[in-house]
Image 1 (cartoon, rainbow, N blue to C red):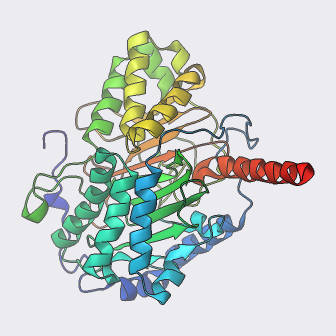
Image 2 (cartoon, rainbow, N blue to C red):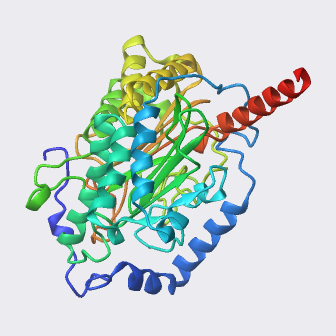
Length: 418
């Protein structure tokens, strides 16, 4: 665990912890009674009502970046797995767990531990058999590494819950799952999984897949005892990001670095948010305007560009090979319009933040202060990451729009020929 700070000095006592003995429902009721938390969820509710535009650099969405195509997504296996899951559900479970493909509920995921959602299937309340069918759908949709990372986040959540004596709130199954649309080999549909430190949104149209927004994190990102001993996450994202920054010349490091203090003392006022910290693309930030900052990849050497692409691949690799390769090709096409920025130090155990931003990819990595642990400053064992498709293709909404336009045109042409 050489790359991680030791979390144990920051474990709260029973008196310091605010969730010992709670379950998910009682905890949510108590947390929402806190004005700051209530205001946050109210703000998120208002953001979810906005017309979707996507993350942009200036408020204007760039068009023509995404197109309908067959990427070889494993849609046959996904449809079969989804069908078995739906057959297992009761009428009430189907009502909560199956929504329309164009539902605005897509945009109402969030990554706190606070269980407020009325839609979706809460995994901890499902039978073992039904929960296993949810996992089979995830496994059929993701790469092996993507699946292992997803269940790893859930397992590290349970590790955190056990470490602080709060398994009723922070558990392996403290997550929600929903299917959108009717599973089909041709027509659009998808699924969504969300909860503490996790938000995955997967849309497929035929052989095409979009897997953003994608949020993964952990407050203790390694398990050093118990059932999950040996589990570690975010090492590649940490190491590859650090290696890339340290490979830059002193001049280019200066261009990439926005500041040294993750607490924000040398950053613009308001840059640090109590819930998102330095992250700009988290839950409900679907329409965030994020200007380009840092170093343009066009100023990097060939080997540094390869390091950058390898870093992107560590995130995009959650998808199966076909969609991953298609996405990486998109990223490479826009490499000269890709920016890399950094906040924090650059030692092996120093906490930091970085962002990779291009017309077609938006990636953030952020070390956080304690939420359930007591460290007041960011440390390396608490990580948040996010991946988005800027300029309107989060949730696959741009390609979904094109699909509807194409289908309508074909139907119109068919009528004309009849």
